[in-house]
Structures are given as structure tokens and as C-alpha cells.
Picture 1 (cartoon, rainbow, N blue to C red):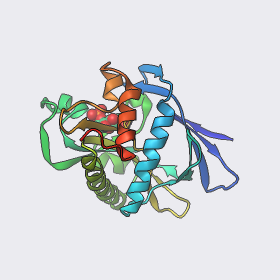
Picture 2: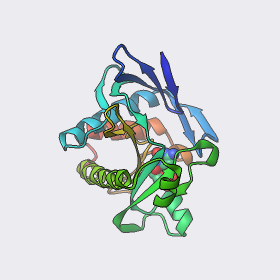
Picture 3: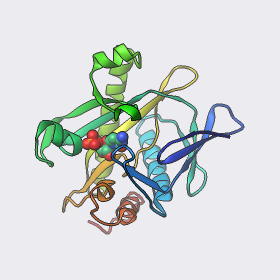
Picture 4: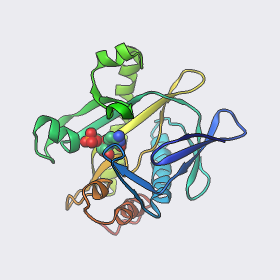
Length: 236
Ligand code: C5P
């Protein structure tokens, strides 16, 4: 049974109440759903990339909801209650940070920046402070500290993983959820839909900005990321 349909994925129940089946769709959306397209092959690419990344993170000790990939478009994940926060980590100025602070894209930020956004489509997912999180009752300050620490640990692992394949991790968004036992797990997906990835040598964009800004073929650059993650090192 379908339990949830988002912009890029559908979630289905399985016989195991603690396990869900995720199906990655070919839909691409940007600017809170204002720009939309169906891009054949995108779902499969993100399923493969996200599965590979969750596996590599697990090897580095970062637990997530990911169990295993079961088909080209599907994976099994632990069932969690998603926390209504988007946790963004930034290593380089880009996107909304460039706009908000009037800084040039590409400026390094020194220590990584962590931001919390309230996941609420009707409000356009606003940036919120830790006190806002508290009054919304979304997470305790201990939970927030934990999310911040986890997000920074994921950043360190992902930065190294991408550097090995000639890619600069500019920024990314994470989501977390609570399992039945209350433990917080990394959830959702990690893919070029949710990260900004620039080629280390050329600064070419290898992520969803290609779609957002009409810079070329989304599937070509996502395929490039997948090839590199799989060990095709022809880019070096
Ligand atoms: O738009 P902004 O610069 O705030 O995005 C920061 C990072 O978070 C980018 O990598 C973007 O792809 C990701 N993001 C996302 N989903 C959102 C908002 C941002 O994956 N709803």
C-alpha cells in the first residue's frame, strides 16, 4: 500500500511493519515545485547513486534508514517518522546563501555552515533558528545538537568520498527520522538532487542546478557522478 508520495519518490508498506519500499520517480522539480519536468532515467540514477552513498556512509559508521537496493528504481528502508526539518550543510557559498548574504558563489566558508529549514511546502520551507525549532516542538535542543553533529560527520565522510572522485562537495541537504525505538536515523536520499557537486578541476556543475538553471542534460551529469562513484576514473 502507498503510504506517501513526494515530489521525487513514493513510499510503500511491505509485509514487515518496520520496513518500507521506496520507489524513485523520474520527476524533477525545483523552486518548491514551480518548475517541473519528467526526465527519463533520473529515478534509476538517483536510486543507484543514493544506494551507493548510503552504503559507503555505513562503512564509515554513519547509520541511515537504508537497507538495500532491490531493483533499478527501488530500495528497502527502515520505517521512520520524518522530522520536519531540512538540515543543510555548506562548504562553499552557493544558492540561497549567496542570495541571502549577497556573497559570490564559490566563496569558501571556512568552518562548515549548518542551517535548519522548516519542512513546510505552504511556507516555502523557511530558514529557522534553533529557538523556532523549539517553539514548533519539532525537536529538543539535545536532538538539535545531535542532528548538527551527525550532519557535520556526514559532511566529513561525503567530502572525502567526493574528493576521491574529483568532485567538490559544495553543499547538501539531509533529512532525519525517528524509528519506533525513538532513535534518530539519517533518512530520505543523498543524490545530485540534494547536493551541489562541482568538478574539482573545471567547476562544472554535476547536480540539479543543471536543471534549475537550464545548463544542459541532467541525466548526463548524474550518469557522470554514478560512473565516478562506481570507480570509472576516466576523469582524472
Ligand atoms: O537552495 P539552497 O542553496 O538553500 O540549497 C542548499 C542545498 O540543499 C543544495 O544542495 C540543494 O540541492 C539542497 N536542497 C534540497 N532540497 C530542498 C532545498 C535545498 O535538496 N528543498
